[in-house]
Amino acid sequence: MNKIGEAQVILKALGLPVQQQNEMSALTLLALCNVKEDTSWVNATRSSQRITKEIMAFVNENYKSQTPYAPNTRETFRRQVLHQFIQAGVVNYNPDDPTLPVNSPKAHYSITPEALEVIRSFGTSAWDGCVNQFAVNYNLLRDKYSAERDMHRIPLVIEGKEYYLSPGAHNEVQVAVVEEFASRFAPGGKLLYIGDTEDKNLFMNEAELEALKLTITEHSKLPDVVISDDKRGWLFLIEVVTSHGPMSPKRVVELEEFTKDCPYGIVYVSAFPSAREFKKHFDEIAWETEVWFSDTPDHMIHFNGDRFIGPRR
Image (cartoon, rainbow, N blue to C red):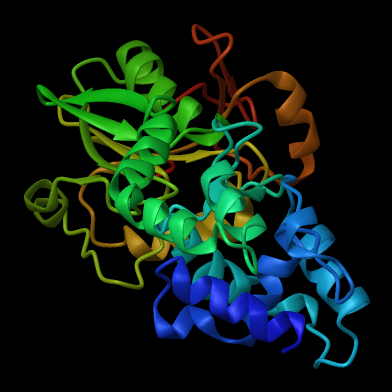
């Protein structure tokens, strides 16, 4: 039996579903353990690896007889292999930095120490005992690693209920928008929508959105945060920018179409963590929109100068 076949046997023993006992899954396991065709399983190692730069590169370099994996298969590795490995307690997600957001380019994976112990025992007299112990500890492992990630989630209280956003700079700024921006520039405002990198519809006040004639469908291109100011008749549409996506002219046109029937005046805001991040996107920002930095929450920049803040229409 070659290494791919042996890896498939190991995956079955670790409790992975049949769909995750295929060739791609086996090659992923081999990469994460740094096991080449001539490497003994007892010499398997544990290291943090990114999908494209380490896992896929290892597979394409060391298992050339297999079909090479192109960069556009990255999402297949993530969604159909690594996601299930994490759920099975076989892989840790972002062990070096659990605060990384879900879509971070620095996202990385490593074999859990418990799974590595089983893998190293393959072909030895300790194999059956290690497999049985891993099965006994499965729920404990899953809960343990889930709890470690939950420790870094970001709390946000909305209408008296506590929500938890996934870790990362993007969600840190989103929380600052709700807690700091709204209190200063939309006092008395009402949060109608906020998404999350793991849950697009983390909070949505559908009744209020419908009352403002904002029809939400699966394909609606909502901004990151929506806040209504009923007293002034304003609707704040806020894009949080930690890597891309300020209120560009194209984005404003999209949102104008989305809000064309809304009776409120629209205020477009690009929220940045700092002026440093803002400088990277300066040329993309549309005129007659606002810019806010979460690290200096008392100040706002208006793009144009003929007025400070208020609706474009």
